[in-house]
Image (cartoon, rainbow, N blue to C red; front, side, top):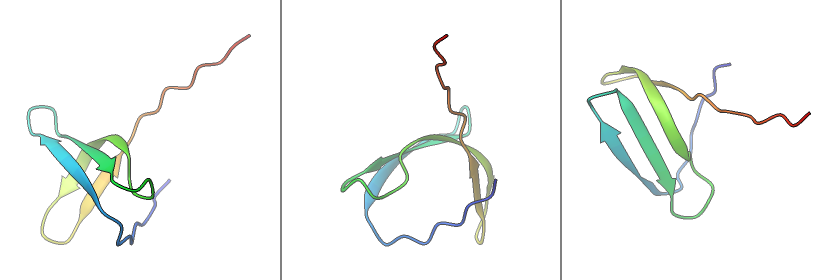
Length: 58
C-alpha cells in the first residue's frame, strides 16, 4: 500500500546509514512514528516501508 504524507506537524528523526533505516519520533503524536526501511531517497522522492509485527493469541 502506498501512502502519501503531507504533514506540517513536527518531530525528529534518526538516520542509520548502515542498514538504511530511519526512525521518526513525533513531538505531538500526529506524525510518522517508528522505524522504516528507506527504499529510495533523492532530491524529489522519499520512499519508505515499515514492517509491523502483530501478535495473534489463539
